[in-house]
Image (tube, rainbow, N blue to C red; front, side):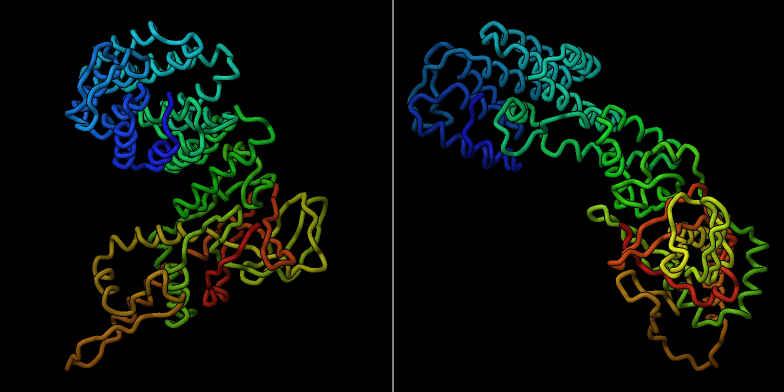
Length: 506
């Protein structure tokens, strides 16, 4: 199928109205428009929902007799146009839009009567795509699989991208990503080959198809909520890829999940770091074994800790810590550099007890023992920090308790509210309060203090810490631990100094 570069560019850019106008002008400027021009015009009109006009146009393409075209283009007197495969394809698509699916499939069969033998394989793909849009999806996918099994190298990328699109359209994102991951030459906006024709015929945009598949797969992965399922699905998606591309592929997926959700549970793993980013694992298989240690507090124990903390953490310190946690931006990746919000704990001394076993004395966490195959700077312990990156979970637990405290929620909207995320961390609004003739009460301040202490109390619970090593440029790299580093929680005398900082992790 031949179409002008101008019309194709307009179509790829997603402007069907302009494309139709360009094609109409091109037809009007020719005394004898080509079958391709008329057929493409009919297809564009079908995609615009003008299937009746499209059918009229296809009649012109498929007819052997002298046709009048003046009702569409009055300045074109007459046309003699013979039958052509593209005309019959355009007619089939228009019939589908008109709700005549069985007639459309019958019409498609006649395409093979007038086609060039070299076009048969592509026409078989078109027939399969037509079956798919006629809701015969299982049959359509089965046909494409059989074409792939024929091992035609010239057509293989076309088959794979059509199959990937079919999986995407029926919501099978894992298979879509897996299929598109092995495409060698993906479709681009400059493509003038068969996929460009399929794009126009069916309005299936193959541009950036792999990225879209990964994105949809990411959303589905995160929705599962199970780290093991995440790992299993990732393995399934990257298994068909060449060995040297697997690590980058699952790194792309993990990065996208974190960027879209802000959830950093995917950083809870032990083993070898990815070459993409040290906070990502080298293989998704680690998620089958790794569990994130974050222990909630029972209601009675939480109340006891709040009572103890009230004498330790003053209101200003509590509000600063509360604002720092609740107002922090979520984690995000950019070009495999992770901007990670976390609470940091400096290492004061570091000793190597035995092979791969280290003992660290920290500020705020006490003594921490861990194992790693990495070589650490024993004489420069201050380059190391332990971090708690599970800010999302702190917010969630705090929010769950808030739902049961309607009076506190009401109070929080009036006094001492924490600023929005785009306001500097730690600042507290002082909203206007109408004058009250009665003496001021400290009840509201006490409630705010309590809310902040609830969140701080959770930080005293054991959690899985990450260990980071500072690099010469000021960024950090994660130290890959052989086992989960579970710390006993923040020491009481350090709770008043809690702040969330953003670290760049390579």
